[in-house]
Amino acid sequence: QVQPVESGGGLVQAGGSLRLSCAASVSTFSAYAVAWFRQPPGKEREFVAAIFRSYGRTYYADSVKGRFTISRDNGKNTVSLQLDSLRTEDTTVYYCAVDQRLILTSLRLPNAYDYWGQGTQVTVSS
Image (cartoon, rainbow, N blue to C red; front, side, top):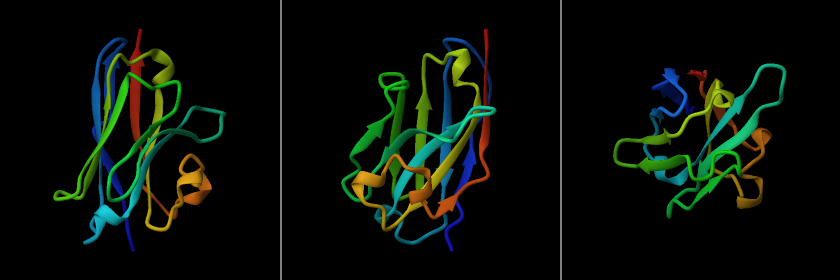
């Protein structure tokens, strides 16, 4: 059983930065695709960024492209999401999701991921 655990959320002013981390206790972490999603109040969970397994190709939602950077450290079994140039509309809970069998065309779909963390709150003040 894979249980992702997020950390690194908090309160920051607009224009500031945060770094989120997702850790998973699994021996073959490099074999998992890892994504970040967020769910604004009253809205559906939305894709933010993902890093595919093995070669680590990255994908981003248009709304965060150029501001957020996803990366992985397979030796530490962690995936990080660097959030720069934060905006008030980035305020919400961020979730880490992992899956070993994910295919590329499903990367942006929440229901394609088997394992989810509990989420970490990011609050951006004006």
